[in-house]
Image (cartoon, rainbow, N blue to C red):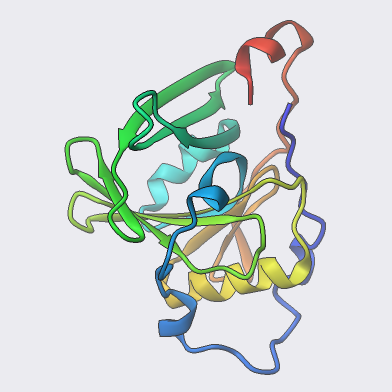
Length: 200
């Protein structure tokens, strides 16, 4: 089971940054995407949504993972997503073609861009849905928890998006980086009998 913990949720609003970066730097797409860094499985640790009603679906989500690998033909990339929702496991798989720091899927309805992050094992992905009608901004990591500086950087990136809502997996959602707007209960772990089936 790929459990996710974050130890500094309550500290995020009080710790300042001595030299904040400009938003154009914080939201800069990756110049070069290293396929070796891309491959492997990561769990979602934090995210932001531009459409608050969708937070209800995240409230019911136990966990989410992504996995990138070479596709069967060896000349492209295979992307697999999984999530555990309402005691059920859901999967989706795509063969994608990377174009610089971006790729599209779902018949071109979603454009995904990899954004720079100082987190050494993370992937920060920005999903523009239906030509920018919605934006999903997700941080994935190989580790079970991030350090405070990495979470502070993510918070600053969310502020640059003018997003009203952000979350840490397994904890609470925060509105305007200060107050709780949606109460999240800490999710239960997978039962032993279904854990092997979830593979998350």
